[in-house]
Length: 329
Image (cartoon, rainbow, N blue to C red):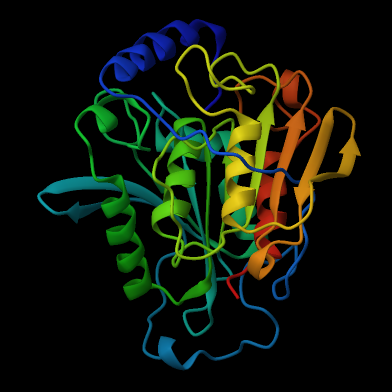
């Protein structure tokens, strides 16, 4: 979601309401990161099957699904939820295929997020299933714990939605359970952090953008690799945290993930290009390095070549590159 100046007032006014209704977060220490230490399997250009995975026994009988983009509805308890799925033309139902969830920000739609981050073209190029869930409410939002909107106010079970959706995808597609990832912007980034806390056995790695961790207590069942991008001039989710809504900032969030992932050495700068400086905590338990890429002068937008303040970074490519080298052990 690219939050324009005209939208700040709406975002903050609704956000302040959620604060009054119980907005909160955690404030434990943590670390930081950068380029990220790699893992095996999958190339940067292909998030699908590694070369040594041919016919997958437990995918026998899977039929060829449609290709392209489709909007769908799924039952979650007594509720109906919607999502978008994009199946690349190279999808093979007999081979393990990676899945990338992408969560839009507060007040926006999944359809807009698909266009903003270019995930369809990336899916076709890298051969992964792209899944873009839709938030709930008149003003769409995610219940990330300490934020946001109706989803937080009414304690919407968005984790349950993701669990139900993932189970449905596994029944239909040949999903590589070692390569299920999540990235998201703003409120969607908050949600991605929560998923790492509560669904660590399902998600191999996460990529939040402009979003700290606002869910507590966060006790993942295993270390989860993290690649986090945030502009230091963000006027909605402040890079340093605190005012106006008391959310964790970039450093607190990464300190927390560094602690949870048992990273053993101080963070160090691992790359610097233009306005983007990345720091990395590594080594960490199970190879789960923690990374923070700070965009100097960056605003509250998804990093891409089309946004003025963050034109020196490509968020979608950066997250997918990280995911390609971080399958579950």
